[in-house]
Length: 376
Image (tube, rainbow, N blue to C red; front, side):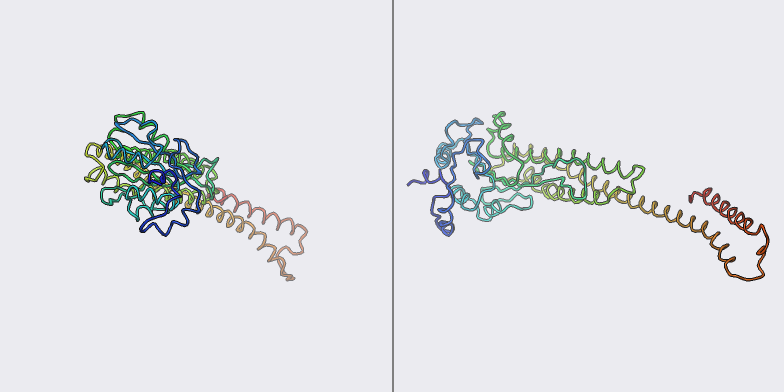
């Protein structure tokens, strides 16, 4: 059986060299067809496989990956874009062998949970982007999930682009459709796809930050309301935790995007670097907005703690004032409860009413004093 026939079903080949140890597992797994249509289900690792020549999609040219790659390399025109979703090692092994992908990059693409980066392996670039998605909710609680994250890995060569997506969001379908609607951009080659992916990821950052600001405004309004001291501080801490998750996705990407915009790299022509500078500007805006949100949340938290302290001081003053008022009758009752024979007005007919009147008068004077000073 030819290599072209084998590549139609990724799981069916025996590995050679370093891939030989995965042959048994590959034969046991269901075969994966590389000729899936553009909207194949996420249950399959392969989402799409298309050849583009001069910015136009070749109809019928993506049915066989090996043949498409061979045709592109023989003619020297166009490139192949292969999209994968959470592939297993046996599913990506044939692809790695066909495109000569570095084993370390392949391992990162399979296992995910990588830091945003751009690495060069020979003439192939390997880029990792953290994707983010805003999780809808009625209100922020101490356990609310505000941001969900995923990853997109991109292999870029002279005649191919391989995108590997991890997570429940971040579909590249809209990116592909936008590029196909702009053939002059797509004609610039694999670097145009890399830019479109980076641009889409960064635009999602800004969209999520806009939604995140609405949550911060909601908590800020609650904290500075009349009963702001009763706001659960867990809501503020939860926003800070979710903002930290967003920060881990955005901030480390600044340096890789800057490298794409300024350094000479394989498969990234100089004319495309200007587009990456635009992405870098948007990313800088997102990073600055995250820093501002972090400072704002710190201020809200400090204001909330100050409100709690003030409320506690007010409660203590009220308790102290009432304790002082109650101490007046307590003292009077204590004195006349000592059972001495010779006490003032002890046997006088109006002694008891007089004593009650004196106690009530003193309590009233003390109460008015505390009231005037704002303790009650």
